[in-house]
Image 1 (spheres, one colour):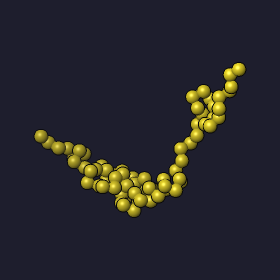
Image 2 (cartoon, helix red, strand yellow):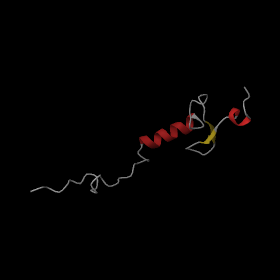
Image 3 (tube, rainbow, N blue to C red):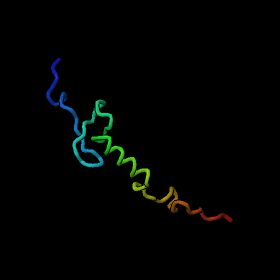
Image 4 (tube, rainbow, N blue to C red):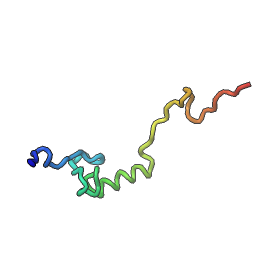
Length: 72
């Protein structure tokens, strides 16, 4: 069986923290990050709440935390 050059090439992805190429393979214990430093930087950003999920409307158009209208 022949292995093509494309399939034997290692997949590189940009590191989410610094943008440098990072090996996306089981051999990289920090994937998708390029290093332990970048992985820890990202973890610290989550821990300090620098990343937040946006608050959208609820299923009935109400804002999160808003009570539905009372029924009489």
